[in-house]
Image (cartoon, rainbow, N blue to C red; front, side, top):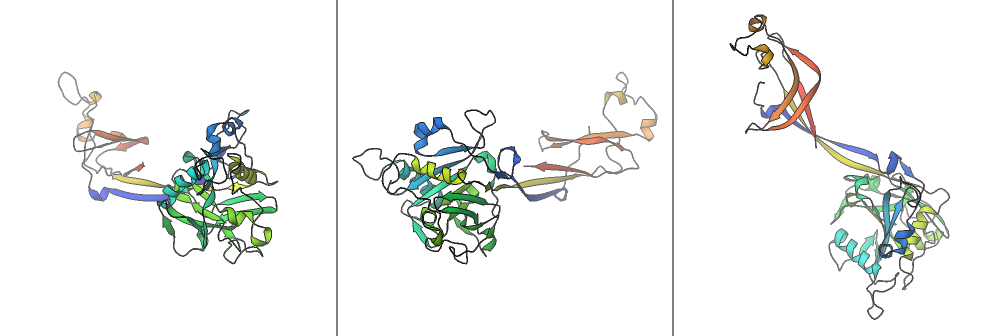
Length: 344
């Protein structure tokens, strides 16, 4: 075994952005949607509904893809915790949680485009699916209501500078698909609803979509699809189910979005020069009784094979091991350059 100290010039750091499909099975578009009747009947169903790609009651491959929820600052849209205390319900709890995470201020409302809203629908993706973040420009979300169907995407391809809040980057939802806006008689030139600002937010860094109920509830002429929400106390959890039905109810239900992550690679260049690493400490080289080299040819013309590179710290602790794909012949007439790549 031989050692050689690495120089700072032997290290190079590189970062690459990797995009991939998000849904189970590496499919680009989710077209089948299921919920759990057990969860709907349980206490968690009052706050959110998990959505699966297969029926969790019958399929062993069913796994959570995302969850849907409804938040209202006044607590409307669900039954109150205590009928004697107004404004406190599952929807107010959901609203407060997202308010803290996204806005960082309990006194600030959500502003979708130029429209201020005290309520929203939320789509939160399963954390393991979107890895580091969602990939802006890859979104196509089709929603259906009593008055029609609309396809939504984000405006990441149309903003000169990015907007940030406590949750990271913020992109407005517009009419369109796969990052391309569609301007119709019911939308403005920037793809917003005519009367109610944008259709919501894409928050890629926390894997969340917030939908603007006001933009979706109106008529087709005003950019909506008649996706109505309740502004008075109603059956707990019903607004969660309304969004689920809007996603899954279309005859051509489509939900496309990709994940994105930055892979940082540390390249380490190991350079065995002609005079280095030509001898071995392997016991087969040396006589155990006399300590002499067993084969005379190894004295003046040694040959070794490099099979492994070990990376050590200054206290001689082994930190990483790199294996060569095949042994590399080394003698006094040969030099080598071995590139070790560490991904993290």
